[in-house]
Length: 232
Image (cartoon, rainbow, N blue to C red; front, top):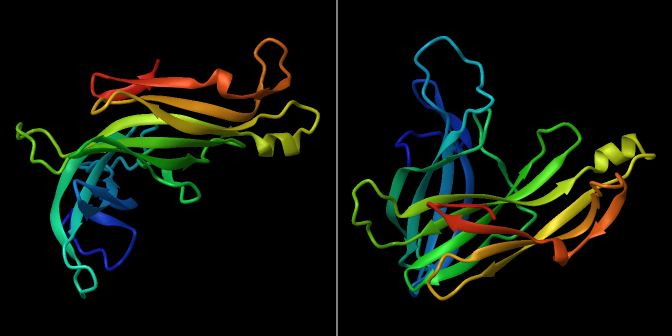
């Protein structure tokens, strides 16, 4: 529905000029008295030469297809609303972060016709380190006034956990760090909220080099500015 290329059910497949499209995540949500489902995907850059090496800083293009529930209980309950070929860039090395199905997608109502999603992701590519994050998106079904604008927007990433368990297993004499963060939204009605990531677990103390407990007193704060969320 996004690329108009039949992948025969594959979750990842080439589309054109060396670009590869990959299904990332899907989520069903309610907005303005209606139910929607959006499937997110990403595609790698097109290649026009023989260089096939992945760029360490190379992000991928986020895309989406959205559907509205029109006829529940029928063979075709979902009506195609539309798709967008670009809603932002994320990831590195020619791929996006993995969707983390062990955590729930979080929702925050911005207005009667706008919603904020925090979709859990996980990155286990670094040696002996697993990082958990949330990818942030906003959506409004109202067609944008600017033809270059989009209904869906990627708003950045917030870190929500570090896991050095494998390091601890290999080096039991060293201090261990493993923490997970809970997201809390704080904002006025219809405004982009401030996001607090409240940690729980253990971290390495910068002064002593030893493991210590962390809690809500050390929450990381992210604010929305210039169209993206960033660390305050």
